[in-house]
Each structure stands twice: as C-alpha cells, then as structure tokens.
Image (cartoon, rainbow, N blue to C red):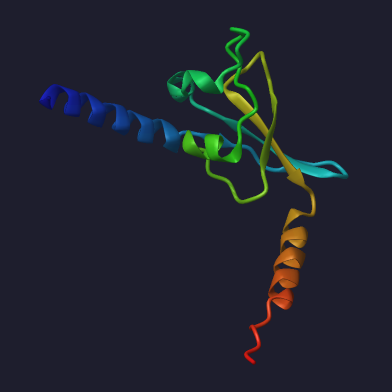
Length: 122
C-alpha cells in the first residue's frame, strides 16, 4: 500500500513539474480571430489519457473541449477553443477565439446585468 502511495505521489510531482513547463505563445491575429499555440512538454503529452487521442492510431489528439484541455493542465483566459491539431508536432495545440472576445463578454455581462431586475411583490 505504501508503495502505491509513493508511486502516486511521484506521478503527481512529475505532473506538476511538467505543467509548469507548458509553453504559451504570444497571441497573434487576423481580421476575425486571435490565436495562440500551446506547446506541451513531451513527457506531459505522453501522460494524456488515451481517450483524448484520435481513433486512427495517428498519435494525434482529437479536438479537446475546454474542460478536457484545462484538465491536462493548460490554463488560459476564457473564450479559447482548441481548433486544430498539427500532426507533425502532436504536442502543439492550436487555439483561437474571436478577436473582439473581451468586448463581446463585456456587452453580454452588461446586457445580463441590465436585464435582471428584482421581482415585484404583490
């Protein structure tokens, strides 16, 4: 039992170490989106659950949901979507979000705040 606990602690320690080494690119953009790529350390990439990979045995990830990519240690602000996989370098994940995402969110928050009014009592 103690050996299992020690092994689990070692795996957790290595995972934390690998997560700290994730590289986040600078943001770049076109007229519609802002982009960034995230480079996972190869040992972390090897620890990703098999169900996150394509079924075609290519060794590439399928497109991950936000919950999934956050679950493997990627941390970014809101609005990013994993939109493409670069097969020659499967440990590089490509993300994008609408170029004006912050403005959209602010407008949505303002609309939600304005639309919520206290219920009137009779």
